[in-house]
Length: 203
Image (tube, rainbow, N blue to C red; front, top):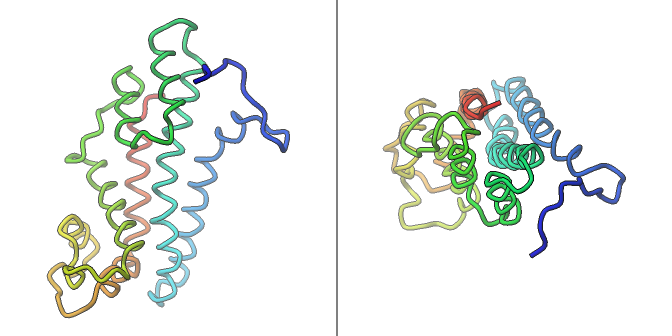
């Protein structure tokens, strides 16, 4: 496998990868903010607001991944040639598609590039895992799993925060999933989780 070069490669449209990836997380965050504004503008019609909220759930996962990829790439370019940090970050870049978000984050943390370790049991990571669970539930909401009539246990805490009854069992899987994306507080909750995650990345 070829080593990662110090020079920044150029993509076909003439923009550098650094220029493109350096703004991609910002673009994704702006998209989330626009979707949140759309959801708020039709809050009186939850069945319409749900479309924007579905987008927020989906894009939020990509936002965190882009944020981590950009941080790894930026720190790689700053790292001294031949240094241990540079080698670790080079390997992370080469394996970028295979590394889970938690692993990418903890690589940064282990080298003082993130303020705290990713722990699924502590905020804001616990809340982000809930967003991941909601995304998965939305993608598979038509699968009619045996427990489709109940909200997933991993989402019960989020249900309480969004004022959704977590024990309802008279509906099918699609209904309980959509009760989340119709919740007025969902967009603001996800945005606050993303803000908290970004703040925990070292500058």
